[in-house]
Length: 238
Image (tube, rainbow, N blue to C red; front, side):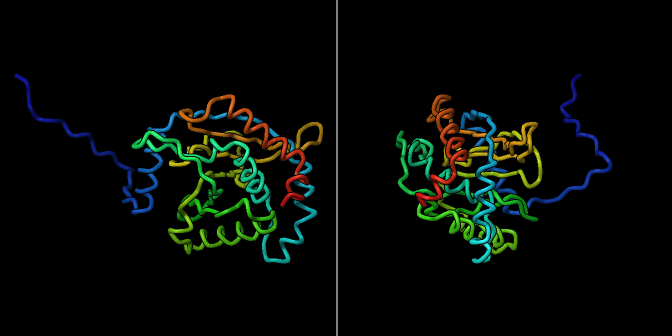
């Protein structure tokens, strides 16, 4: 004789349930979709940011005059927006319904911001048209709005590439999840001084392997590293 009764799991003590809000539920569903539909590859490297940091210190007062702070993240937005023009497959998306690759001729960089409400990714629109100081001002403004819970839905949409910087918290290499319909994301860890006195920063580049192969990823990351090593070139161009 076999019982048809389905046994119930035991009730465990010490567990406290908390219903997810609409935003948390939407984030969970979207991240699950991104991870399950995009074949991720993550490449890691380190870069000497000593010269970039020197430039940041030299230009910092100009940003402060406009009520902003020039950070490494703001400077990297400039570098990334320039790199995307050289490597257009990193500024694209895949349309599965039409079986097309859509290359975007606009450069909108999402910045992951840690807030009390969780991770929020506001977008800097047309980042390629801004100087490093302009980007510092814009990044300061959207970060403050995100942390104050005042960011609009429009300011969270339209990104073509994302930067996630955990360096302010700590940590080195990680695997950032590509934010669909984007095809790539750059993760940044905490910079540390090595034995030779160089300020080395870890980079983690995740990308959609359906569109970007390992050689593309290596070239893209090398271009970024070279630009960080010669930051004055991009500053003069801006």
